[in-house]
Length: 332
Image 1: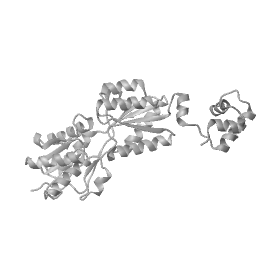
Image 2 (image 1 turned 45 degrees about the vertical axis):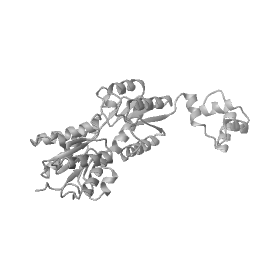
Image 3 (image 1 turned 135 degrees about the vertical axis):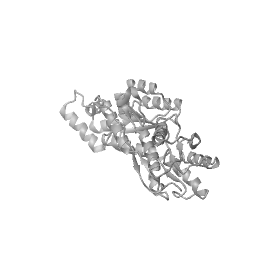
Image 4 (image 1 turned 60 degrees about the horizontal axis):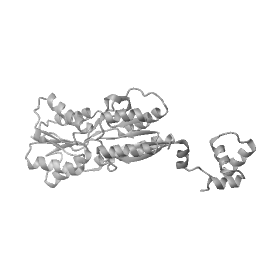
């Protein structure tokens, strides 16, 4: 890649003149301007993006803070964000917060230090107050979380309704003893799904068994541990609502290892509708989270904020039930 000095030498002008031509500044006479543009075209010169950012004090990109780099959930989100922003000629810079307050704060500071035009934040540990304050300092969209003070900046899923859908489906099949493997209940999404499970049971007049609710961390290993604990404690469940598809897969592996038939002996419902849910045997009944649509909306809202456009009110995205093969009638 040629340098600006090489372009200047080719055109017979100074590097400062090349810079002025590229920025559209005057005074540069027409003949000199044409000569510089011809040199740029002939040599295939493109200015360094970081150098441009130093000159303009902007990077011209969007920063994304995510809780964890691993897992299909964030993979779906990042792919859609990147594609949506690329269509607007905007780059995406990613930093992981690890689900810890200090690391999330460091990730925000890192991206702001790179002079990103705005931030999309998927943060589990930062407080509502911290996010509301951040929104006053930089264009901000909060992903998969509702912050009442800045609701128009939030893209979130009605997780309470999703948990209700999953549990109601099992109730409709005659199940009355339904376990629940949750994600970390300090997180809004996990707490919402548990609340939906509880509402569905209350509507049917079913008393909750606290032993049937086990908190995990949205990993397959947590699903294995939770299912093993329910079986070891002989909690009399015939069906299970899992906090996400990974936890459901972990539970399924334990059930298979202990000789249970799914769904004859135990029914399961996952959450998120990841690709693995379609391919596991039996195929996993799950709650679909429209992550791609949510990510696209997040990117579009941030671009509006960066452009100085006022945001319209935000409404939650609605999950839907995907019926497959892991739910059957309650054993008689």
